[in-house]
Amino acid sequence: MSEHFDLVVIGAGSGGLAAAKRAASYGARVAIVEGDRVGGTCVIRGCVPKKLMVYGSAMRHHLHDAASYGWSVGATSHNSAELLQRVRAEVDRLNQLHIGFLEKAGVELVQGWGRFADARSVSVIDPSGNEQRRLNAERILIAVGGRPHRPSIPGAELGWVSDDLFNLERFPERVVVVGAGFIACEFACILHGLGVSVTQLVRGDHLLRGFDLEAGRAVAEAMQADGIDIRFTHSPAAIEGSPGDLTVISQSGERLPCNGVLLATGRRPFLEGLNLEAAGVAIEGHRIPVDAEQRTNVANVYAVGDVTDRINLTPVAIDEGRALADTIWGGKPRQVDHQLVASAVFSQPELSSVGLTEEQAIERYGAEVVKVHRARFRPMSQALPARDPKVLLKLVVESASGKVVGCHMVGEHAAEIIQMAAIAIGMGATKADFDRTMALHPTVAEEFVTMPN
Image 1 (tube, rainbow, N blue to C red):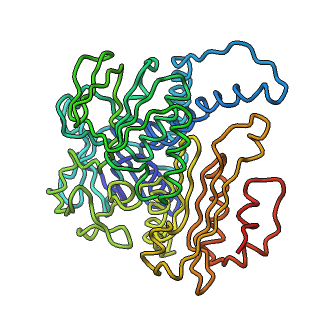
Image 2: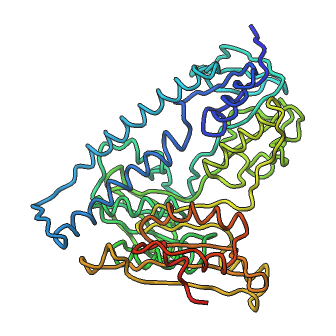
Image 3: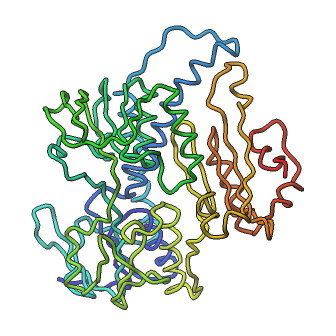
C-alpha cells in the first residue's frame, strides 16, 4: 500500500522537525519518518542532556566557593546515578513534547526507519527489516543527522562514544577521554567536575581545532589547572581488557588503566540504510552535498543539517529546514547565510566565538592590517574565592575599515554574551561602534566596549 504526501521527511531531528512543521503550516501534507525517539541528536543525546550535565558538574565550583561568601556548607557528595536518571527523565519529557508538537502541526509521525525505494518514494522499515509502509512524495527531505565515529584501533568496540554516556547507570572512577574537539573537552570537564579522574589524550599540540588558537589555549590551561590530565601529542594505539577494567595503550607504548574510555573522535553523517543509490542521490566523501537551496543532485530530493556536514549546529539545521519550507510552500524564497554563525564550547570555562579567528583574519587580510584587542582578568565572581581561571575577551579588527571581524571569549556566561555580540558583528559594527557603547558596570561583558585602541 502506498500513500501520497507533498513532503516526506526522513529523520525527526532539529532540521527535519523544523521543515515538517513549517511546511505543514503552509498547508502541505507532510509525513516524518523516525525509527528512534523524536528530537534528534540535540534533544535526545546531545545539546540538551549534555548541558544539564554541565550544570550538574559546575555545582562543584559553587559549593567550593560558598564559604568565601559566608555560607557554611558541610560535607558534600555526588550521586551520578541520580543525575543520570533525572537527565533521562527530562529527555523522555521532551520526546513526548515534540511528538505533541507534530500532532498539533498536523504532521503525521511514521514510526520506522526510512529508506529510498526510488526518487519519489520512501519505504518504512520495521525493526525486523520488513517494509511496513511505502510513502510517495512530491519532495523528500533527508534530515537524518550524524553519528559518532570510532577510530580504527584494536579494541575500539570496548570504548564508549558520546551517546553511550547518557545511558550509563553511574560514572566510574577513572576515564580516559580520546579527542581534542568540543565533545571531548565538554565531557572531560563534566566528568572531572563530578569527581571522575580524567586523562585526555590529544593527537595534536592544542585543543579545539577551528576555534581561535589563543582561546583554545586558555581553555586548556584552565582545564589543566583544575586537575584534568591532558596529554598532548598522544594517540591511542589500542584498548585492552573488559568493561569496567580497561587499559589504553598509547602510540608511545604507555599503558593507562581506567574504568572506561570515551572515544570523542568526531562525527559523520548517518547514511547507513538510506539506500541513496535507489534515488540516484550522490554523496561526496561521507556527506550529501547540496546547493544553496538545500537541493541534492536529484531535483526533488533535499537535505538539511549534519548529513550535509557543513556547519553541524542545531540552529543551522533548524533554519535550513524552515528556509526550505518558506521557499517551496510559503512563497517567501530565502537562503540560509552560513557565513556568520556563533558557536560555543560548554567546557569549564566556556569558550564562545563569532566571526573570524585571529588566524583566519590574518590569512584573509594579512597580518599588517589585523589588529587584536584583548582583555584578560579575574572576574568579580572569583574575587572573594581568589581563584582562577581568568577570563579572556578578544576582538579581532580589520584596521583599514575598523570593522570587528571576530569576537571571542573564554569564561563564565561566554555563550550568553557572544549571542548579543553576534548581532553587532552581523550588522558590520566597527571598533568605534563598540567604543561608543556605554558600559554596563560591573559586568564581564563591559570589557568588550572598554578595550583601549
